[in-house]
Length: 314
Ligand code: SF4
Ligand code: MG
Image 1: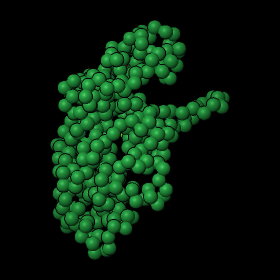
Image 2 (image 1 turned 180 degrees about the vertical axis):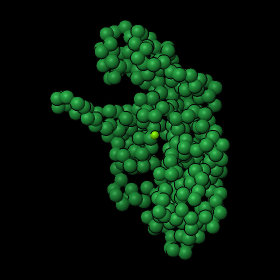
Image 3 (image 1 turned 45 degrees about the horizontal axis):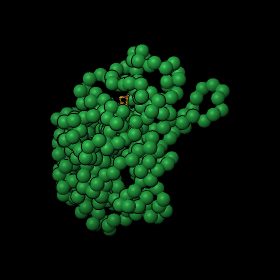
Image 4 (image 1 turned 90 degrees about the vertical axis):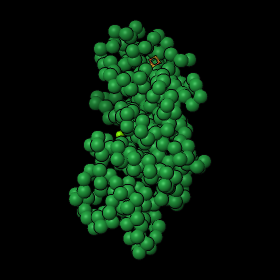
């Protein structure tokens, strides 16, 4: 609810004023239990920052993060440690996220230890089970990450995430580093695991064609804000926001430098106005009109389970 994350930026020159970039700017959305919510947008739009803020790897500047009704930003350290194990992350790069010096067994066992889930014998058993659950033979347990393919390594990353029996799994571009042929295997695995373990997913991706196969509900982000949120069928059949349409058309979106003729205020004035009030997509929008410069579109409900932030619809 109203999530904001600002990062300080360093500026050259003599300005003493601290400058910030609004990585996530007033984001509100809801993920219902058992569904997969896809968060989609170009790199730098704030989707990974949102995922990391939910796990409190980044402290939000403002807003609430409600998990089963409790604002986790207000939890004490002890309370948070308990809740934390119910939310796990699967990372984009299975190469970078697995310690090359540890065996697979040790890697998967680590979260079990951290959360004091079971004793030694039980832990070894759990590791074997987890390997089987993600489609790897348990004799792999004594091997090292470099002995596995990219797809297998992502399976190991998923096994590690499941070790603490989470309710929510945040998957940040989990298949982007993989060959296309392997991507669908991992997507299918995630779907099966969702069924078996009643998982809820936040699935982060820059690619709308990837999330199509796994998400129930999709939020499209642009410049730190949600610009459209809808159920999967509505979003693909009737995308409303010009940015969503451009993403789906996989057509190059107009270059902001070249579309400057469309600005009818003096350029600087328009930039300032837009930064604070106007539509953040203005510079690239093929449908922009006067109102878009000075008035920021709010995320409004335009159909059941379909919200969009664009003046074309309000
Ligand atoms: Fe384009 Fe205006 Fe809609 Fe923004 S509000 S997406 S500039 S039409
Ligand atoms: Mg990212």
